[in-house]
Length: 282
Ligand SMILES: Nc1ncnc2c1ncn2[C@@H]1O[C@H](COP(=O)(O)OP(=O)(O)O)[C@@H](O)[C@H]1O
Ligand SMILES: Cc1ncc(COP(=O)(O)O)c(C=O)c1O
Ligand SMILES: [Mg+2]
Image (spheres, helix red, strand yellow):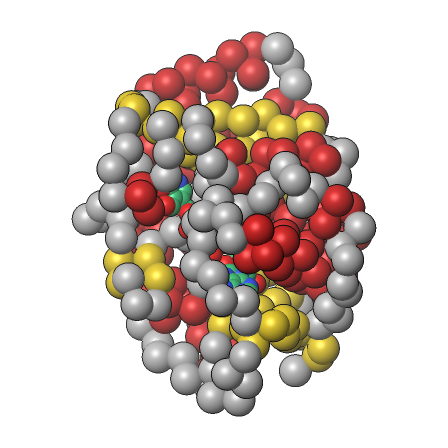
């Protein structure tokens, strides 16, 4: 499996490609990583150094891969946090070029916009780009609850409202949707959920809520969900596997009291999660 992953890079710690690439490799995928920025560390620290790369670099790197004659062997494009809308356009061009070479290739877009509590944390124009440009091009989307609400203009307080919002999102583009960090009316106080949908079916998986707040888990979950969805062709298996691995990774991170997710130290969780959580139809 070959995955073109276009995301940010940090030298220290694990967000963006620095969160997504290693789990994919550990699971056996080849990753063609294009970095949209190179920062010293993630922006959650409040201070960082480094550079934002331009859309032109993305285009050039895709052209270089195309010139090797291998674009047709790309199974999926994965994108996450975008520095600005120009990078977004270059990513959509990359998707179009991959699809031209391999019509079976899928585009998985993590529409990073913001979070409950923090609100919108990306540059002006990005939320609209995600809604109006990226979602119509996506096969798979992995919004968190806040992003699902923003993209659809619907409040999500109950499971029924979450499902209605997912259906609305599917009408705008992605046939397969994973809602992360879902907390609705009937979610127990000590739990966190994900909701996955495809082909008119819905699946919900519940895991214990851990007393931590980390960066990079969203990037890892999008990568894991995409991998398992491609590998098994089954959304229930994909959401169950991804949830089990992410929970194991974050449990180990919480136990270590680490500010960065333990992508390397807890790598066995990607292959053999220590606890299994199974999604139920809903
Ligand atoms: N405090 C937590 N306790 C348990 N699981 C968590 C916690 N934070 C995140 N997760 C898991 O990681 C997934 C992605 O999390 P999150 O970082 O909220 O994504 P995003 O960056 O897209 O908002 C969640 O759906 C959940 O499964
Ligand atoms: C450079 C960069 N990329 C990606 C992310 C995404 O992190 P998360 O998965 O927590 O949304 C962040 C968050 O701080 C970041 O600073
Ligand atoms: Mg996210």
